[in-house]
Figure 1 (spheres, helix red, strand yellow):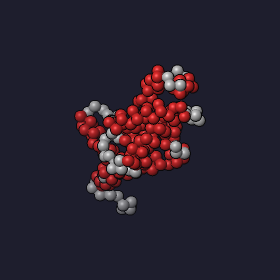
Figure 2 (tube, one colour):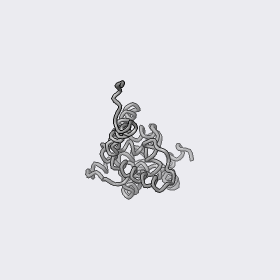
Figure 3 (cartoon, one colour):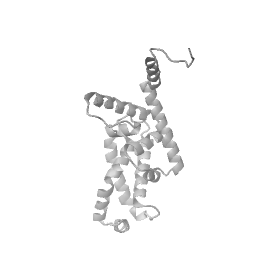
Figure 4 (cartoon, one colour):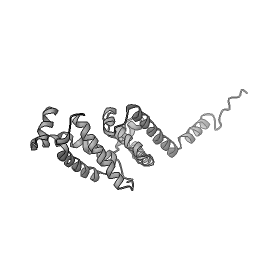
Length: 209
């Protein structure tokens, strides 16, 4: 069904058109809600709320944007309102999995080795902890782009940010997360230790002998 026809039928109260809308968008709405709320049960409830909002508001849709953009904005705004009402930030697991944790940091895919699997579990745990240190806005941007895989265009539509603003804030968010992980893993200290080991237990001072 073409979008224009779908909108017309929705505005006419066609129940079969609404069912088609649910089938088409329920997964996208759930993923977006999960990115913001970080709780599966809350995301499921929010998905239902979004469809109720769509059902009661569709007659006011004026075609100034794509239907998907309108739906994403409704979802995002309802989720943000939910967070504001529940000011106590939840420190729960995100939907981060092995592949996504490696993509965020540019690591190789899991090899299947038990030791490698254990290290990946620790990696996911540390990334989740790192996400909790970010501002709500920065966390949400990483969840949307790097974990849920929304495109830049979709995130622009979801958040209402300008292109340059989105890229700048996402870059700062990634930098903050990487800095947290570097400190968590003592990467700089490890690098220094490696230099010492490579040079017989001492650092080269660059002076000729």
